[in-house]
Image (cartoon, rainbow, N blue to C red; front, side, top):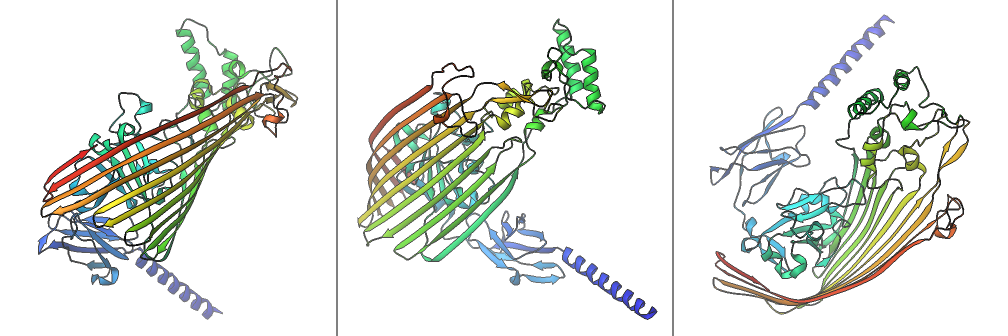
Length: 621
């Protein structure tokens, strides 16, 4: 028996030693050192990236680098004007345990970055030949950004593109301006946004579908679009299919959002003393009596359990909060959650042959709001399809369709002024619950937020785009774009009656008004662009001429109605409203509606000339 115990102890010691050794081996990091050169000359500023992680390093003035990481699968070396190189872990030379060496020689790239093609108005140009101010953002820069829409994804990526968020509600999108707000007014200083050549909503576009974004910032670059481009143009090109076997890509994002810079509020006793002092300094008398102050202090200390007292003037009801409440609430902490969950899923397929390619994608995004009572949320669903087909050597057909649905739901009491009102009216002494445990509006916002009704909005975008390209001879290309977009929106809100509870726990009417509001709009947008360009070179002389015309037409209508007197709270629809107030008196419904139509037609042209790619000339009409 004794022998068995000794043997067991030896085994345990051996296992512990083995586990400790494995832990030390796992904890060891891998260090890679080396030098990057070009024709035996050191290169400084080369980026060395560890593929599959965020770890990276840069070479110093001697071209040397050191990179340490827990694991290394492959290293990528990139530098402006040089061909990118990638080395697998198996290609590294091991110097000692955990230490490796890799010396790299970079070669100048055949196509310098300045020769990349940039999308401009009704065409594209090499970046080195641009005469206007254009900022470009590509798909790689937009990857893995934990944001709700494409506008937020662009923030901080393009110089001169200013993106600001002035409201915290999820139905409000960030505003965009290029190089500052215009002098005409904030409403007219937004740039023109074109998605694959058609005006569209950047906020409703799935960021994963974007191939590139060109920001035309100066008058010369944007002038070809006329007066509607007075404050710049944002050109968005979506992804297309690539020839080859079908490629399936799925990615997701799970994230938590938390409020920032939340106000730090006084406790109830400090607030009461501060408020009394302010009243006295203003020549008045203290609002909180000595007996009231003592109740507030007792409630904080836990010796008093009730958040308010019985109304001295009516023993059936609890007393009003401003005059008699002794609760201790930080209303920003009460009304807002510490964090909100968001998730996004993207699925795409692309492939095709040399003549026909396709790209299909689907996106689902759901983001919860920060309201603690009757939370708000935003959902987006989108499906996109893009087919490009080269029918013959001189004729090509491209078709693009996109469907986007946006749903937004919030409590009806969550108005644009809620945050400000909470700071002004949310005294910490206001009771959240009455002594019987019911939500108590005294007045305080929690009851209205939870039981005061819902505000629901749904918006659908349907895009249909057809492009025909004819190139009868090399260098001469004629393009026709036919774009159609429909926008449909429905909005419903209901404002419910509210009930407090008396001392006996029986409900009584506190807010006696109720109503239902319904709103609907429909917009149809048509756009035709037809243009022809000719590209020709003679020695060092290079000419490119483009002329074309376009027409736009928009038809818009909306209808809104509000009617009082909800009969069945669980079915807040117009047909189940009485049209009367609580006393049976008729209330005239509020009805609104409008029709709008506008259309534009114009012609445009552009001439580009360069001599040996050193002297450039561009003229726009």
